[in-house]
Length: 61
Image (cartoon, rainbow, N blue to C red; front, side, top):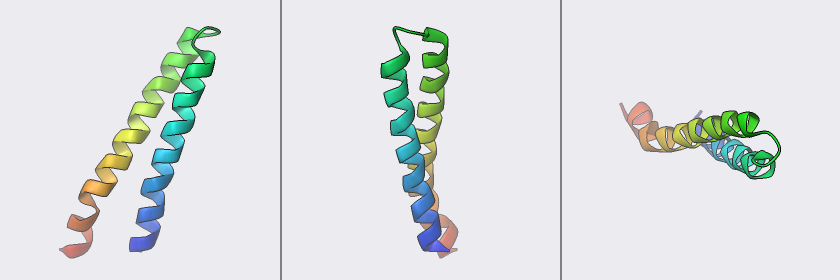
């Protein structure tokens, strides 16, 4: 279970990076779509940090 949780955390980071690339590519074309992608990127990166920070607390208690 620990290994799966670690993989999911890194998957959040990959998704966040993909959304950041989408923001850069769509900024001049469609700003509204770029902003939505930016919000999703921030959320995905936040989830990555959150999962890495609190993974030990869940498995050690």
